[in-house]
Image (cartoon, rainbow, N blue to C red):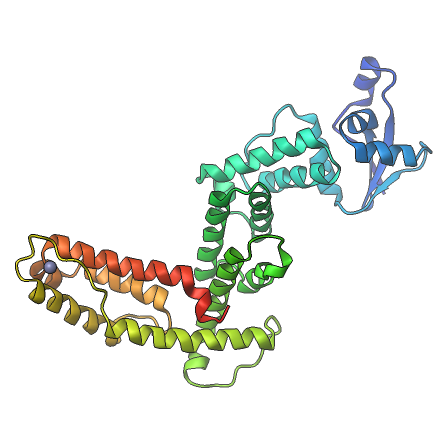
Length: 337
Ligand SMILES: [Zn+2]
């Protein structure tokens, strides 16, 4: 075991300031820390109780739960006047440790301070520590936004998570485990959506096997029941695409549109040509990416630019975007969730 003096209060300084300050040794994991308990007891009923229960000053007070690093972060939080906004993942983890431990040990003023710093930094929307955070930190921040009932920030973090799933930056299995609604004492709807996108990511990974009817060995990460959801989604999305391809989005013609029938006809044949042929480099079951590609292609398509009034073309493209948005919001239905 190593004994380190907590940076919270230097003993010589403390001695000069107040003779009544007491130092006690805390044991966290295999590390011992000498800490000014006056500061801890003043702010925390939990620590006051721990100190009273462990009167022998020569015996370390053992803390179970936090790591030594987390405890150091708490001591750091107690020692600073204000909590700075995080600049990188390490800072963010430290801030989240301060928030969680101060809540655990009922240090209310510090918990509120840490919580509001986390909320403010997420709300900024551009903080690189938040945008590039590890999955674990993402889950911890989600818990805070749920607790403070901030639906806007919760949705923002959920969207971050969803895009990480689709860009394969994030392991879909972790999302599946976290999204199990029973694990959260909260509105299960957002977690069902996350679960839907996680199954979508699994489905895309297994797409070649699913489309050729090959046997799929159950990966150790997925249960039999979860695989049934994935298969369900595959068949549902496959027929959804056929429907989309056969029915181009209907749009409203602008008052300047001189030949609405011709306008609609041009739109329909162009859409059908793109949707039915294998022009798009994604499997038909990948509706999210196919609609994105079709939108990109049509937006720059000279044939439509030449043959449709600008406003009509714009309305038609908007309808296409709406279909994609609708799919993003309802993808979990395809997986029978
Ligand atoms: Zn028109």
